[in-house]
Amino acid sequence: MKTRARAVLATASGTHFVHDGFSDILYVLLPVWAQEFRLNLAQVGLIRTAYTAAMASFQIPAGLLAERWGERRLLAAGTALTACGFIAAGAWAGGFASLLVLLLIAGLGSGVQHPLSSSLVSKAYETGARRAALGTYNFSGDLGKVAVPAAVAFAATVVGWRAAAAGYGVFGLAAALAIVLLLARLATGGASEPVPRAPGYAANGWGIRDARGFQALSAIGMIDNATRTGLLTFLPFALIAKGSTVAGVGSALALLFAGGAIGKFVCGLVAEKVGVIRTVVLTEAATAGGIALVVVVPLPVVLAMLLPLGIALNGTSSVLYATVADLVTVDRRSRAYGLYYTLSVGASSSAPTVYGLLGDAVGVGPTLMVVALVVLVTIPLCLALRASVAEPARA
Image (cartoon, rainbow, N blue to C red; front, side, top):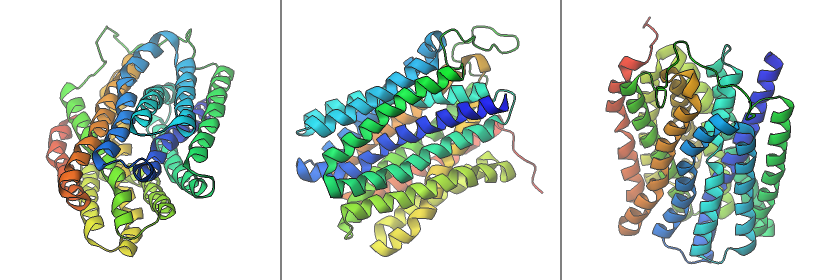
């Protein structure tokens, strides 16, 4: 049983790696597209929004469809659709309109990944170390964020962005085939698989046991995700303005994402020791301070601080994701995860456009300062969440 659970976790983690790679190579490609197609910052933000908005819009439908059809086929089909979107972008993109349409398609396919993979891992570890398993799953996405943007940035300097994007799309198609074959071999995620029912089961909508806690958690997640995409969308422009090259941007993002990967483990351990609330307050305050410093310090100092900034920036999400399962019932977990991810990713999808309009008006530096201020709103929201989570006693 443990071997099977680990195999399911490995498959879900590999899927997360691939999809986060697709999502985050956009941060490398956006400045290239802006230069080649003469895009303004609002258009850059709209392109990023197109991908994340499409991804957000399909997460609830994916969670609902999985209850009838199973996760396996939906997960593979969505991965293939995302891959085809990037292949098509490399082959045919000729400007703002075509990029917008193709990334809408790619984002729609990527909407299956978070709710279905989280559901698969939760089922596999229903009686085991579920929080640790979900932490590992979340960590795998950060590995994709570290490796893929750096690899694509390097490939783009050698063969051009079109071949680099299409090449990763082909890798995504191979991953889609591997997903369906591996999950079929593990006999999980199929349409005929019975859905586990919670004790005293009754039809309870989204399966939320603690509405106030879930609302507070979702609000924090929305701001956290909006902060992350706001920073990542315009950080490359800030770095280039300080003298960085496109390849240097890829390396800088790799540093930031490496910190995020570390943060997924470190912040989870910190939360076990000092509690969810104190951990979130610590990481969000550190994120705000780090973003503000990015604006005012020179490029070498920015590069030196990207690793610790990444720990705070991404570490919060690991604490939040693991808390979702504590607030919902087992039988409606796919749709509850779909709801949470829709809200958080939906907020992140609007952030690049809003901040892009602000950036066109006041510039990149002041816009990043606003991003730093907005993240501090999560701190009072933690007070509303406090009553819903179990915190360790102070020594």
